[in-house]
Length: 376
Image 1 (cartoon, rainbow, N blue to C red):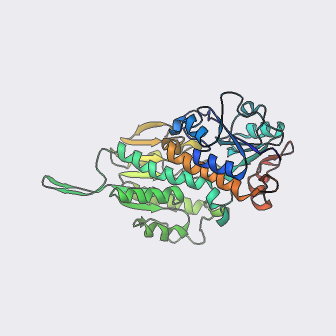
Image 2 (image 1 turned 90 degrees about the horizontal axis):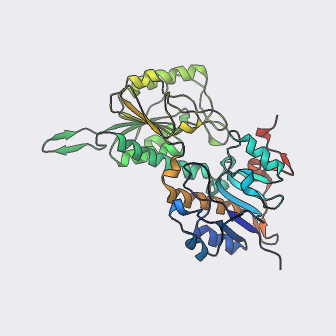
Image 3 (image 1 turned 45 degrees about the vertical axis):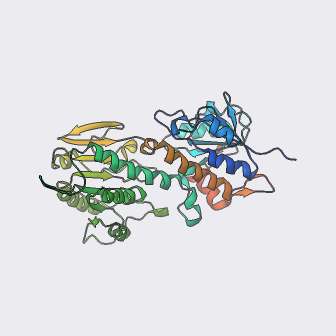
């Protein structure tokens, strides 16, 4: 009988990272496929998952040298190459690998003979939706951003009619209506705010309205849809950017809460709010910058700090999903399991990638960097 595939789940080392790449639920499912699973001791502690939970699910708990003999390594953030000592040649590294920000690590994977699979490069196609780590984590980020902003805001969100008088509803503005933005709209609405939203993609207008928010869009600028490859936003023309800035400036001055979510894959986050625009907002207002780790949508935002600018609180966690470790881990782990399960070949006893998804996410193979976006 062939030796089962060895899957290793590493404990995260990145500062502030509370998530884990597998849960007892997904460990059981991986073992049911025919794999052997090893979990590094303490890997799930920050997500309230004990080593005993993993052992009960059938995993081996490694106190040291967790990657020894690994055929597949699962992680949330790409592990440093020295954490992979002892992994088999050709082993898969399956994680969010930050290929553009950490090209040095990608090169190290290639040099060590690993096959690095960047889960954030998963194509946005129907059959890959259940494997999409960006969407699952962005959904939680949009929710948590509103809660953090509400906590910092010195007033209530909903309108309240009391014997002592009426409390007006907060006005919340969401900039960028992807997965995070849509969840931010829904959460702010549930909390009772008056919500408006904008995006460079005109197709999002109906989505905004469907959630009960008011769409704020640039009008009379023709031929600009903002839809990039794979459903992501793309950079806009200078004409559109100028019109957008003017529209935002007039609208943002009336807002109490602003959530910015705009990201362009492989590029610095676009600047959406300037210092001058912040100065027009009411003192006590709050801006949450979900793109702060990629350079920020908001001038002056600092990762993991609340910065007061012109009386406005500007905040953004570098890793917002890590503020919800249990749920973020559960969703991330299911993304990875769904990925492995979708390509599991029973005869081979391991996953075998097809060309469409394999070429989209594979960064290194055979000792070389092979992804087209990293070449040339």
